[in-house]
Image 1 (spheres, rainbow, N blue to C red):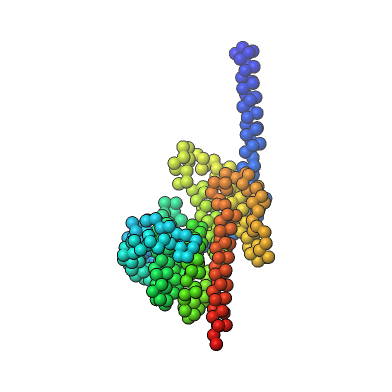
Image 2: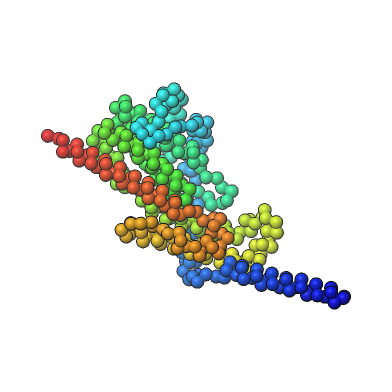
Length: 354
């Protein structure tokens, strides 16, 4: 080999070494374990996994019955329903145009829903990535059509059946609220945001005894913020458990090697610790905000930049907790405001009595 060729080889080798050094410097933060108490975080993960296991091991009967109901009326529940923030929240003419179809569907939905709620609505959900969730749009439209029926009963002065219908929806909503799934928690909030305004529309028409039944139920309404925390704990456990499983890499070229390398290099364990630590810090901040004066933002994302800056899992898999919790707080405030308004209505009626 001539002197010129040797010189080229040395230059190439030097560039390779330099590239390796630069890559090591750049990638080092992604493989360096953060300064956290790993034993404490593993203990929290075990606690959160227990909530996931409880959800997965619930009886499937209610879920299957509800899914069958939604599938049976799928065509009806997939029709557009223009819902407004006014009284009434629906288009009267559009509803009247298909009133016969609505009555027939609601009659069957009522019968099935009563059977599901009879012994308490317990919702099971698998965390298998291939498992389906209940169809959310159809579930929401079921609630809206029930509210249409409720308001129709009030117009016909059928006050007790209208109250019964709203209380059934409250029990239906509670089943989703008691399920530690982020998707169902947010569905629960969406339900509240149509149920409460609809109730506000009819509060003046309801007799006092029926209004008192509703107030008693609202006073026992599940704490949406608390449910959100439980759901985020479960969501963290699910993401952490899925990350690193061999099936997660089966469709990736060289997936088995990537899994082996990620495991041996401590990358997987580090990513898990970063995610659990992030969840614990954010949920602790939410708890502190809840038990303090509730002023200002409960979470400041700038405080968690370390987790987002040197993690591949967090930016991809972690939801925007700030935005989601804001929606939960708004939904909780809506419930409190309505309860205050109903109590004021009852107090006003008592004051008017001779």
